[in-house]
Image 1 (cartoon, rainbow, N blue to C red):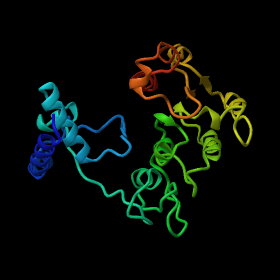
Image 2: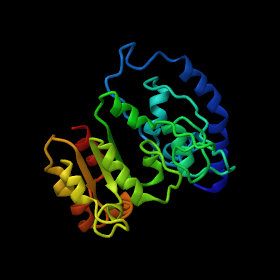
Image 3: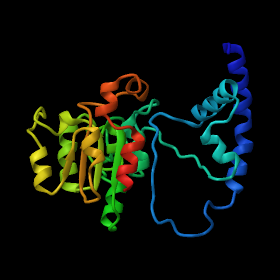
Length: 258
């Protein structure tokens, strides 16, 4: 596909968005009027509606089929809305400010996690769920102390304080935490090894794929599968060693739900 045809198709896809959006708003509620039993929030860091449309265009041109995301909308199996996640301090929004706007409901400056411009500290949504007696899990391919997942979990004025965020998690005692970031919990942590403290509080700690797969359904669970972020799936698929030691996002998600 050349750039001219891609951009031409992208423009046409962009022009159709308002019509698709109107149809989505008018669609009947998914699943009728029953009350939701569980809530699963899936966050693709940096993904906008433009990303979805371009991916859909690419799938149609390359594979002759629509993407699954936009297919859900076209078949009225899902509805969508737009949310403003802009930073309070910059025209360019970082992960901390964007995540906080969703996880805490407040516009904050870049680098801050759920700490407002005047020092306000809105309670993050996963803390609210836990307070209401719900089972709470956070599964990610980045360090679980990274700004994107942490924006749903903690209040701290510096996204860089990942060793501090790890200690905050110890106090929150969420039921399942899985992802990367072992260096912010283990023996290489600047403030000391936190893993013995997690074990003392009843956590089961998994540090590779096999340890995760054999976990039973008892809680709480801390899964740390990389020193920093998990390898990209395209790299994992071409490395037999990584396939044995690092779980996929799907495997972590299914284990967390179990």
